[in-house]
Length: 415
Ligand SMILES: C[S@@+](CC[C@H](N)C(=O)[O-])C[C@H]1O[C@@H](n2cnc3c(N)ncnc32)[C@H](O)[C@@H]1O
Image (cartoon, rainbow, N blue to C red):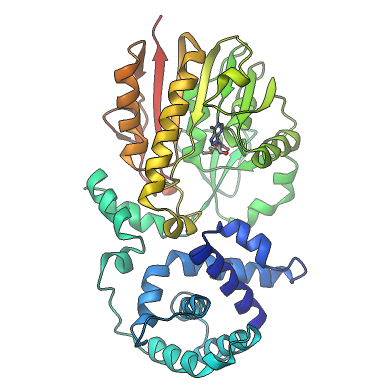
């Protein structure tokens, strides 16, 4: 058991202090030969620890006189308190296993400290989160930005970000029913009762794919028609590309992705679903001169790289990794991609701008800037339930009907 604590602490340390992505840290620091249930435990414990990281840290810091220099030990304390307050592990097991894990990592000197701090923090049942990061489990800059962007919705968004996400699937066969709830408008989307169905053989056989209902709206809005020439300009892992191909036989789809490693995941998905693209291009959306074949597109899907602030419940490490300066870098990249991709559209063609973010700087403000400098484009109003209308485009607020937070704006090139 202490072995699982050791690996989980290492993963947390890498994510929180070395800025490694959670999924990468799991691959790199959890031995492949571990029994499946141990790997599942480590994954669950890391997700829970990261979702509640701000308050858990405050809980043990309260009983430490000087700031703890050993960051790894800090993560072991956080993990241990996640077990106490979010995983119902008995107290004695938590302390024993933490001490053993520290010993395995050559930190026997820390036994006394772990014993004392954990026992005090576990018995501190009157603990109250005194600041907003501990109350909402997000960094202060993020909370402030949400308050500004969504004064009526910010608490709802923060709460939804801390929930365990449900399992939405995209069914290939709209006649087929599943154990769960169908989405009221999107015929392919089902919210499954069983969260483990994502590993089923039906998935491998291509009967369905795992995709949030909010993400499935992209193909609904773009509404591909037979014969159309379409570009998915930021495509990996290919969820929306595959949806477009499934939705309409006879489209010609160019799929573009800058990251070679992520491009492989698109090819795997196309193979799993037995779908065929016109071209799968390894290229940069800011440099069409390097890959554009000269024939303009009828429709373009622009699912730009973004802060992913709308999918934090699936990636709780984002809350700790993201910094305000990343947001500035991302908005600059989004602007550049939009400006360089838009000229590839035919007159009267459609461009759908998408993010999985709730920050207005990446969404309506990006479109406002674009429309101000591109008078040959205009906005097409979208009319869907479950969305909040913005200055331009619409926002699905995270958690609405159990969906991720997505932003959509449909633009049309004037004749
Ligand atoms: C939000 S994800 C796309 C998700 C995808 N549409 C789906 O539904 O599966 C954005 C993607 O854009 C890629 N990307 C980032 N910068 C890019 C660029 N300059 N050109 C093309 N792709 C880029 C990222 O590697 C990432 O895979």
